[in-house]
Image 1 (cartoon, one colour):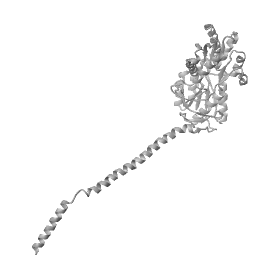
Image 2 (spheres, rainbow, N blue to C red):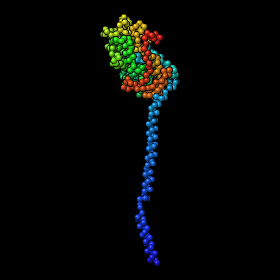
Image 3 (cartoon, rainbow, N blue to C red):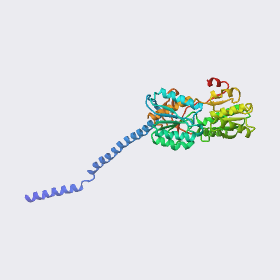
Image 4 (tube, one colour):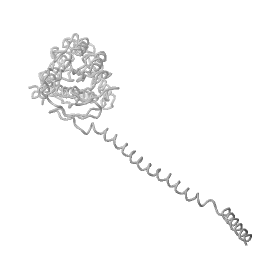
Length: 395
């Protein structure tokens, strides 16, 4: 009996071993493999969704930040103390006195509790004098200087030293050609437009048949004059102005006597010249007086950029039938606002920033297309004066 029980027990053990050996081994790991795949897939999806959202947010956020400067109008906070200097090319020129008038208006309007100085060199020492004023201002606690540059890039090292010392440097009327040391240029008009305005006035004065003319400029280093003349030369390549011939470009250094003599020298050199184009308020008056004194107003006309109060006589007597200009009072006013905003830290002077300049409205800082570097705002507009409007404008 015991022997039979032993045999039966042995058979059961052998059967169990055989069944275990024959059972499939794969099914147990298989269920474990499925969750492993699911675990890997789920995090991937979860990671991708936030990544897409993050990418979208990253793309949208900078766009909003980039758009902010042009969307938010920066407004000045009055009553801050900023020591400022307005520097013309040199003293003794009415248009620069008008610019100072506009700057003083803005100074009072903003309640600046520190002083605004109007400092400039003499005409004979303009280049060295401007550099000296900027250099001295840097060491005398001046916080902002506004420069109508007559020294070309010669003033750049002094302007850069002023910037390195923490001073705000803004140019107006005439910029630093390289823009070195300059934060912002307040352009009176679009310089590229100036050439067209002068060419149109020349064509209007000379008539359908056109004629020959010369340019009487200020100084060879005046960046604004050079840019305007370059614009004029470019305009003259247009077939529409093919009947206009530019004979020469001469310089009167923005001094009355020099400009007067240069105008007479042009008459001697070019007997068939019919027009002198002077894009300088000093040169245009001197040229008109020279033609009047010589009794040549019927044969040689004068045009360019001048001040109505100084040109009214010559426009009415036919010596200068047309000329153009902008408001220097407004230019000084606008320049002051820009410099004040920069000096007080309200504005960074970055491309795309929009600011309010009091009664002149809003301006947006842009790349200056007339130079390889530099930022600008454009004030404008041009006004062309003739016998119909010069008297009213001169009062």
